[in-house]
Length: 143
Image 1 (cartoon, helix red, strand yellow):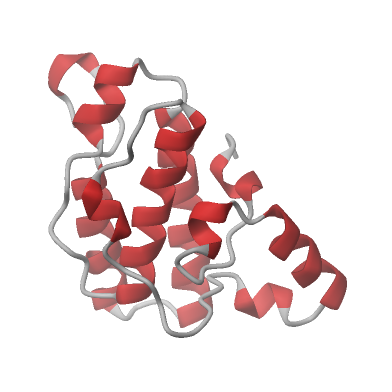
Image 2 (cartoon, one colour):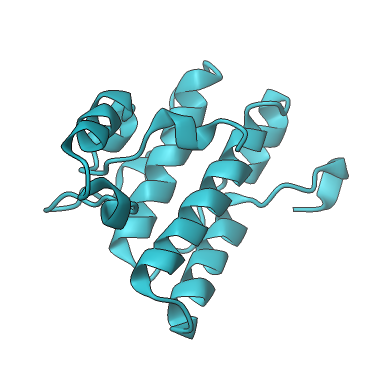
């Protein structure tokens, strides 16, 4: 989004970026997940420093992503941002997707260590748990 002087990705732009990245098939699943985890985490973390009106503008409902896991993750990230910035309530669109099985975008890393996996579970905000996603709040801090 470039209007009003803000240059962060909007939820819509993140949704399109996710689809384009996964549609390319030029990365392994683990590499694509790592890239998207970093991009979503970085962009969403930058929303924390913006004025409330900018966050509201950036988080207007995007078209649904083709990939349910990433759709749910983006919904959770926006809901978490609203909660953290004390904006109530989070947009209704952020409650559309609940995954039937756990999604951990860093599964390749976490399956190697039970301790790391347990730490991730503890660090996952409720907005992600509600959607069946394992995603550390550290991912939403400036990387």
